[in-house]
Length: 102
Image (tube, rainbow, N blue to C red; front, side):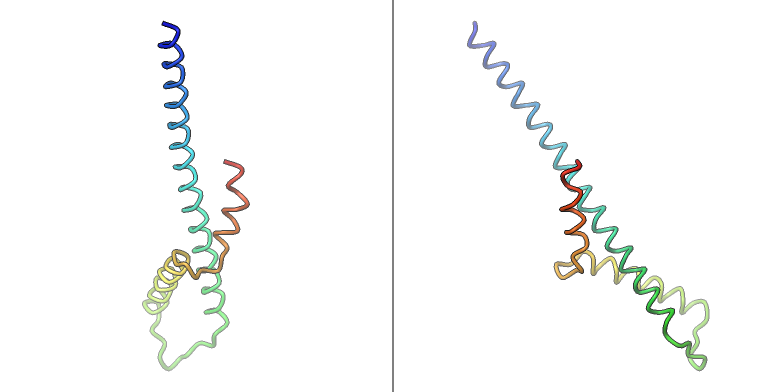
């Protein structure tokens, strides 16, 4: 009878550990995605600032449509760059700093 009680305690402890680890893995994945999103926003801000420094071409000015397309393209490009292995490394640095706070 004592063995059953010990076995039950071990199983409950193991089950709660597994649940906690699964919850922590979910938080870990969310933190990685948030860090990647931050890097994408940072890259998009860089692209936007760089475009503002370029001289305006009045001959081929596409107007509002061209600006909208460039903005969408920059957003897409920044998201893809942040997802890749050869990103700036901001997401990795941020993750290393924040993972212990979970």
